[in-house]
Length: 615
Ligand code: SAT
Ligand code: MN
Image (tube, rainbow, N blue to C red; front, side, top):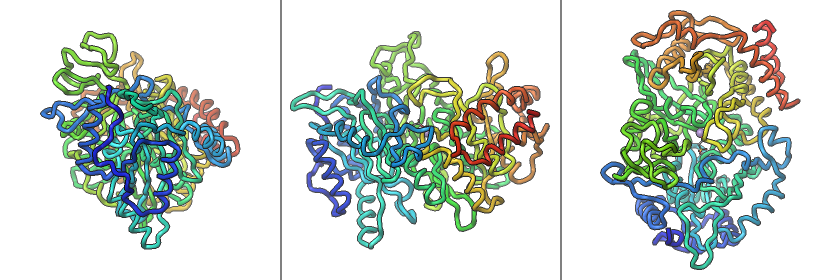
């Protein structure tokens, strides 16, 4: 904890590129932030070793026992820097209207002036890392480039897990540039905001009490200050692949969504691709890697957090995962809830943040099997199973390469992606929302997505367990006016052949009985829900029409071999008209927020729901 900021040996002041635009931007940022040195990130194994060694030296990382987790590291953040900071996140569009009622806004010039003040000299005593990266495939028809500048070695190694980056990317940018193509790349500036004076010792987790996570949608630029945490600092992820990409998608007619992607194969060998949107920390990773409990069904993973979806030449909606790793919530992950995630992280090459460190150099968290007799908790205090405090922060994370996933679908490497058959929306709701139901059509599905609600989780700073509307699970990630975003969804349905678009479903694994117990066992048993969904798509499973959509008909939903009474299943699937009537004023209030920017067809959908409920 006493060494100065890590400076990898390969640090070289000669820029390894001739790309004028990138060079000019790097120079401009260096001028403003005054780093001690500049390191152009190559993405090599040697560089990873130098950086992780240096992070061990500064006390940011503890190397885990190589026999248990080879080439893996443990780190604990400053307790003020554990999650996304939604109240410090801004969409700085030129026109305030374009940020809409769900985002924080400030005029771009005003924000830049304010942040230039924060950035001035903010990298003093530190290394400035320049990370050329690409979200999605380097061989994509239009590779989605970015360059992140950061003064954090922790962010640099985390980015190497989460995105394709380094020299190859730089070479491809130069190649396309030399071929006369107008190569676009997103400049993404990040600083932990903790400069070091001459001789000043570094801390294990440098950050700043003042935090700003800012997107400039027209410029396609990102400025982030003060936090080292995942979604605030790994700028390829939420800032680029969702906030900025959603703006690009609106302009170009595609979708950038907070969705997992999975491949499902039936016992007869029929393949379906499913995308599913749940809010942060609501089980996307577990569903993406689901181990089916029903015989003969197989799930393979393509992504656990973000899907970019474009209409293909065949009129279908094709999805790619722009990421290269998983940044999953650790607590609750275990051999039962997600055996494939466990296998993935146990292969090593992983980073763990804010979990507990055991005496044998392994990590542990709440919900994991075999609690250690003693450990160090995420705040650095001694911990035993008798302790009153949690060993791990509820939003503690593992960061692990997607290529290590033992059920990664081969199509992951295909730049064209996969054609999506079904889109699932889901949230965490104790009441009201049935286990599964099907939208009547694309517009109704958009209505379901636009009114999606969920109890808040620890993935963002703030109260946990409060029901809020989280449209398409994108509330913190829509980079423009959410009313326009709904119109964009409606238009995707109008401008394309509806028969070729995915069918839309709504799911809720979290419904409770009167005693507060879960009505549905979830996890691997969710394969039964997926089975009903694909049988619906293929016209094999029966459904009953209800005021809210199509719910499984009696006998159409497979509970064979499951310890669940038909009554409990019926309770999980029930549409309670009184509960839904109570939902209507909340949806009305939510829609009113958007004024004239709400597409009128959503009011029409709400009117239809009211009429069917007898209101
Ligand atoms: O930290 S992230 O924003 O990437 C994770 C999440 O909240 O979804
Ligand atoms: Mn997420």
